[in-house]
Image (cartoon, rainbow, N blue to C red; front, side):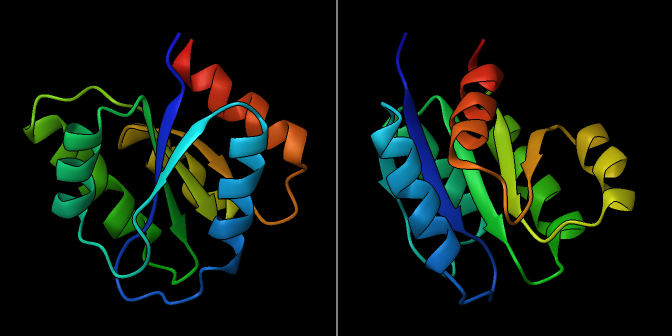
Length: 127
């Protein structure tokens, strides 16, 4: 089974320390990681996911825009005909989890999630 993951920051959130830590955790967990960096658009993430032939997309959200941007990433992927799971990492209130799931987000990881749980969660969305 392929294990390519694309990680990106979407929108204007410039805090990227956490996503860089997650990139290393996933790399050490056996994933091939493509990191797009800061200030991406949902359409840019979707195009990169297609071009890089990834198996899962992870977006880091610390700006509070997760209810807008995460569904936009899912929609952009689907518009390209891609059924790639999307995992959101960052500050997401429990009250927003059901709405994200309904929008097609496969999993949400919040600050403080242990490394082994990050790897297990991303692995599980590929099954």
